[in-house]
View 1 (cartoon, rainbow, N blue to C red):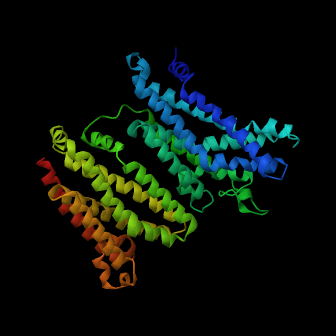
View 2 (view 1 turned 90 degrees about the vertical axis):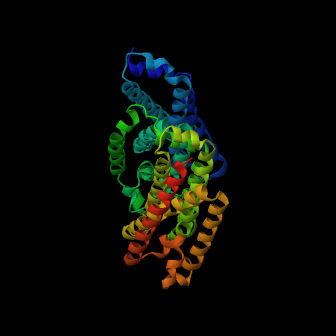
View 3 (view 1 turned 60 degrees about the horizontal axis):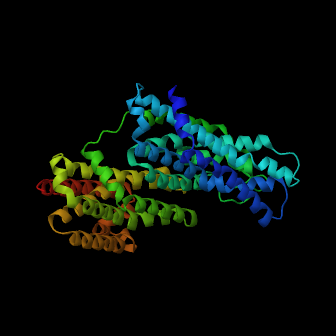
Length: 448
């Protein structure tokens, strides 16, 4: 029996297989909505009801497929495949192929049932070609997410990937019609389908003459296929080694860090949809970055502190590893926000400047907060964070930001250090503070 046949056999009667029923259910609900809500009786009006799946659920469903397969593998410890004379990478490659097949079948089952439904409703000959094309484009545009989610599930576990799927879907939908869609992989599964179903990304029907009607389908699909090919090695590579860095990252999965980060990103996306891009910069610079970095340090250390002595016995580099993991979280969130700024209309140069200031500043806040916790008390760290945010609002979020007093509100430098000369100073000071207090944290935490 080949590894692909074995994987297909293991998938039968499993939760991922049962998820295929989501397609017909979505189709049935959409047809019911057409009958109960819409007064139009035509194929064009029925096609518009696909917007919910394309812009709100497709990436999340892929994440659920990946999550349930990863959960199955962890609970069954590979189902005995580890004892077979088969390369683990081949088994994982077969699993990726099966996942891609499940995703394709699910997409087809969302779209194709509309054909008989519309004919029974008297709409005439069904546009089977349009329905099949839309299903294939949603699937092909989401291949990069399927592969990325598979790799992320092996590293983070099954359920964080579902949260990432929600973020992926929201970002992709919001940026589907932007001029910088090519920079945003989540948009590649949404953009090519909009002309086929006749709607904008927000569900509004396309007006005659809209440029969306003529959007080419192949650039986002090609980009998705190329990125998926690049990410395949990460999805099928050998098992992740459990060293001090991986152990610390794994221990943080049960904290509120992941859900809070996802919620913050969703809030920023909502702000970007409703308000001008300057408001997104203000919310991120005055609240999200300083407050989030301080909260990240507090939550992480409170999770690590009870078992810290045991952690130290597994590696003297544990304090540095903790700094590295948390610093990586700051980088990832900040890069995502910078991409969101570009999608929302900010010039690429401005977004890059905010990114250059935000990352060192986030590291500095992390290091200071961690050092205050281990040196003094968590209450001291929390109060210092609140005072810093207040000072940032006062000196960086008001007219005082235009005066030399902007220096007195370092927590708001992402917003107030908006010129190259200010940015250079802010980055230099932030890095210096991060190095000094980070060293202090490492020395203090190393004593246990």
